[in-house]
Length: 385
Image 1 (tube, rainbow, N blue to C red):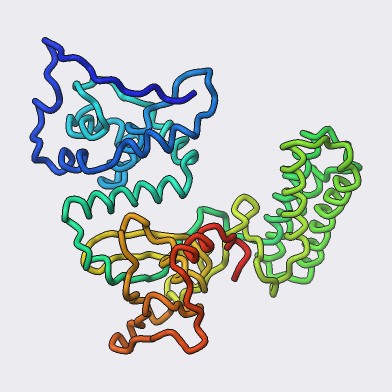
Image 2 (cartoon, rainbow, N blue to C red):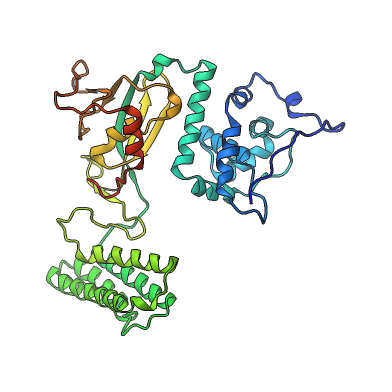
């Protein structure tokens, strides 16, 4: 159910208002007046189309807590605990009187982050930049040059091995068959775990011929269960479960058909977008995660981050910039390790030769910025290299 709108509270004889307790020259008190809170009240209310049930938490409160959590690097539990103790935090989130109890359970923030997604986080950043421009803290010339760099955001996954992936895929298929009431010829619940353990022992003993033979056998177990479920797909009625089953079958099929030279390999079934990235680090040759593009305006500490494929990191960092900045950057400074297509705008400067400014080539296509930005936001980059 949609959250109830906040009403102005009357004065209380025994409780002073927060504005009478705090210093209005404090940074949080000033920032509270600059941010457009009504935007979050309007936009985020659309996440709750139902007209019955418990009213949702106030979007103003959630947006304020997310701001505080990012600004002071606090966990969900810590930001809620400090909110109870700090009157400036309470004033920033829209409270009128001092409250002595937590406003929400810390787990509520996790659910809200999943609900608003990446787009909601982008709007949080946008409203921050708009507040900086409005207050004069961010000048127009501060947004003229942007520095872009890339790094690897590692995922918390187990080291990928074929034996582990085949066994995990087999367990997922067996659980899927049980949920869909599909009778399998054999589920290999006893043989497959023992075989996966034996493969690790063969590898440790450097008996690679036996290891490859056992690995091929384990792969056959998973393939048999996959084909068995495919033959009985008509037993699964249409709906969300059927869609989930088809997605699982496609993912496992990709796993069984990939080889060491394949592109877009699967390293984790629960995180299929994870890549094996080599950045040339002496301490770590390979990293399993996603390529992250970091954009930083030169004159001010305004940063943004995007997880995108390596070759498109600079293109995405430019087109996915915050619309609240008010202008396009005139110049982009990137590291010498950046690869990918050149942009017609902005001009790119390699840090290897900072005085050399690369102008667009004669065949470069000059596009309208708004149309290009919209196309790149809606484009699916998941399977592009």
